[in-house]
Image 1: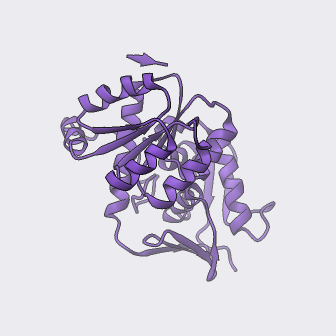
Image 2: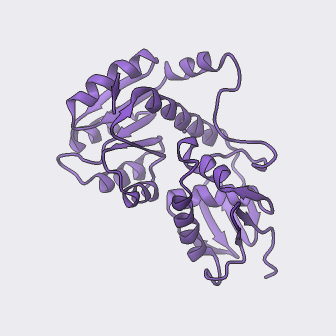
Image 3: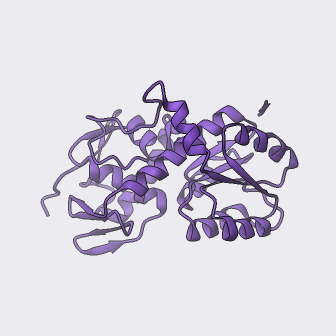
Length: 266
């Protein structure tokens, strides 16, 4: 019924793709096993959304909890600790982006925004606040479930990471603490800026295409959002470059993508 998935793989993207996708004939079975142990909290003030999503998610094996207000959602977040959250930004009792920040501050669960807001600034603000994906209304349940599965796979990969640090170009990324420093000075990053720098540092020295970066950080559904990527690269450069107007760490490969140099010579 129609109502109108970051990769943490330590291998270079150009050698071993880390993008999500079916890997074998048994992928659907694996997804169902994962789903059977997964609780999804749907936060939306439209009863019709719940009427559509609840049976669709349950048919795929997901335990589903619904909330129509931010207040009710907070109760479920505290008592149930869901494995994933589907969040509408237009709630009756709380501003959507503010509520997203509140959820992210207390939960590492994947958060998928489901919203009628189509402006680019809305998506950028949501990603900066910690959203893992953004789906516009109207939507199809098939697309939503596919992107939910992708977000859950990404979260599972994060949980499997060993506690260690990776370094390149004077940058140090602590994967356990999710913090970044340059030459010993801490750098404050938004959740998506952090995900982006991890991809760059893990693949230091290699050209990464726009599509590779977008798929690794935002999921395959955003593989063509080059403008979104440019905004975040600009923000990242402002925080890590000595001269953001003449970047020496994250270099642009015109028409292709970006490259994080292995050393800046400093």
